[in-house]
Image (tube, rainbow, N blue to C red):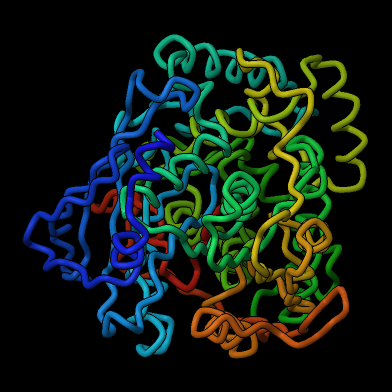
Amino acid sequence: MRKLVALLSTAAAVAALGGASAAPDAPTPEDTGQGRLVWSSCHDTTTPALQCALLDVPVDYAAPHGRTIKIKVNRLPATAPKKQQQGPILLNPGGPGDSGLWMPGYISGQLPQDVASTYDWIGFDPRGTNGSEPHVVCDAHYFDAERPDYQVSQGSSKAWLAKAAGYAANCTADWSWLLPHMTTVDNARDMDSIRRALGAPKINFYGGSWGTSLGSTYGQLFPSHVRRMVLDSIVGPSISWYDHNILQDKEHQRRFDAFAAWTAKADAVYHLGTDAAVVEKAYGKVEAALRTSPVDAAPAPGKIGPAEFEDTFYSGGYNFLRWPRMATVLSAYLTQHDTRPLNIAYNRYAAPGADDGAFPAYNAAQCTENAWPRDWEFWKKDQARVNAAAPFYTYNNMWYNAACMFWPYQGNPAGRTKITGKGLPPVLLFQATEDAATPYEGGLAMHDALPGSKLVVQTGGSFHEILFHGDACLDDTFTAYLRDGSLPKGTGRIARTCAPEAEPAPVYVTPPPALTAKAATPAAPLPPTDPEAVRGVLR
């Protein structure tokens, strides 16, 4: 494989990095001997120039001539003159397992044309997900409502343990040949297969959430293949996934407390009380009521019980633009006996959509990459300790990750890939101090692990993936780096600080008058470009 790559002449590689791209309707092969990309139009009405292809890659890179799978790839070709082009920039929003196919059109559209036009924007679906082949599905009904209560005090532990064990067994029954090969390292090697198929000696990269783990892992494996790299909302480079979840629990509690304080200041709008503790008790009242009287989830199937209610609310820790709708849910339920806002919020934020393969990919990466505790008694005691300080999210998060207790592929005792940054060019890092999904400590730890990196901190910011929300301080720093490699001049641990966005105005989100309990349209998740969307969810 390496010998074939070496056969590419330097001149051919330089031409591939800066060459003009073919018209989208004319299939154009690019082949370096490992995998072949045949581009054709994606027939995307929003971005007509978008091109799509499938790339064959090995299931197991230790057996490169063995069984193969296909990675779905798309690109928005550079349009700048050839001498101004800067090569491909691969994009990943996180997950693990989220699709990156929406990113070329969207992210390039957030930049000045003189910068965006100089890159080939490359999106891809991680192995086993979405449009990649095969599309891994394990127990397609796992998230169907109404699910068992997350709170162990409600006697639901046996049900959840059986459910999580069943999910792991279901995955293994059909996908034992692939699941051990869906780690972050495997996905990073897929990125290098994409690079080779593009004929590019180096790539640029932007990744958010788990995409920061993917990018830093790629940089560790292939430092000489990195030209520029941006990591946004950062997973710490060495923390175990189990311990990372505990950090999340504590940060989600802080964000829920912030939501309650914001709601209390708007008592004239929501009538839930002027004290944050009273607002949090209102949340508890609604959850308790749903235990005995779940709400019809239509157009999604099933009922909205306490688990579905918690799922509707936890995402406010990722995007505070959801707070007005969340406060409206509580207000409508408790002051008007109106469940319509809850129904709308659940369908908008939490109802399961089509199975995109992201949850199997999430488990396959996290459960396999490092050792997890396998003893329920340990989980029960340890999570009770965390829950005592952070009751909002702890048990929700625990059961979401419980399949790792039963995952058949033992995690690596040595932990995740050690990140040293050796041989990498300067990496640009972005981190908000109040990020619940990838807590602030991760950004500091990644900066410390990557010599020469520059860390930009949004003090008081809470968005998960903080670029492209209209903050000029952040977005201009990103643009300057992509334009010519310019980095912030600060020399301390934090190279630049940016102010947070203003909190949303408190408004009562009145449901449409024509809404009925049996709405005609099916439930669908928000597109990742919606202002209220959560990108790169890392549970």
